Length: 451
Image 1 (spheres, rainbow, N blue to C red):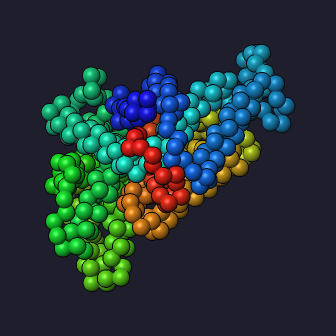
Image 2: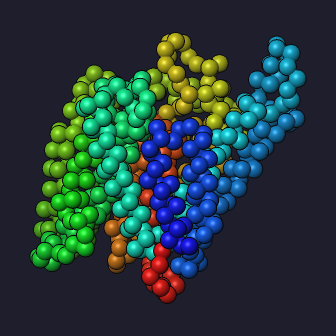
Image 3: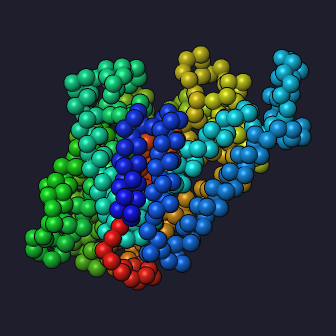
């Protein structure tokens, strides 16, 4: 039963990016159903009291968000709390709809499904990864799925650049997007997978350097040449997206991961500085090799986007008067048009803020939004602590912390975490890192070799 539960979870993790990034609501329902079924049959024999510090905040935030969402769409609230659009609709259009906090009557409840999916993916990966072997299997499955998506993305761009799976490609024709519609989300996904491959490759290289012998490889998928091919393939695919933030943050995350591994050599200064110099040189060469499209776009547009900055300023104006309870989850697309500044012109569809933390603050208010950001910071700190404090298997929290850094920073200037296909992968990797940041000595001893 536990093996079937593991298989269902892996299927949801590796297939989530496939159907156009799972942007359609039907896929969110499907992955939610699969992960729920997997959770109901989860093996809890390795859970310990320390896990409550992770599971507890996740459950509390989800319950608070559920209660807020219901309150946002609840009809008949006072004029002081209601969005003024409802009063305008009654006065101008003669509709009979009651007051609501939310700008729309049903969108928050629909958008809440994505939040549930994210928490389910994080929790399921966490419970799986209380076992070190299972954690490595999850990360390996995601990494090689990303490799397959990268190979497809490269070949599709070279051989059929106007096709996106079985549909015609309408956007980003000069760039590779793989199975995603948006090239920036594809860059974050492939960048994360390159970090996963390096996370497995770095300990092998460190062992070879420190122990001065050739380590034994249990399988072809763990051979350094195979792992290096995975890193390079995912990096090439990332570069072909032309995403400025995607490429730069991928290199930053790879450098972060490499440095976390090099800290193991901090008592051997010669090896540490030699490795640090090699990482710096590799980052520069990597940017020059994979960042051709990015360099060109930086030359044309610079590192910043003036239109996004204008949307950020406008979003802060939208927040006024909604600081406590927000405008409703998923309501930005509906609420933005009346605030849209003339400087944006008539072109472009702004259905998202292009900054997930900022859109979250607008949607659910400052108190709950700030709480979620604080929990995210604590989770990242926990993974970093695990990378430094653990005596064994520290590569797992180090890898997850680096992917977490990439995903969070990218979501600050884009909406990658609002795309279910990447959000599920990000949550699964984070769950692995959080579970393995806890020392094995705190967990119940394994009775049998099972997943």
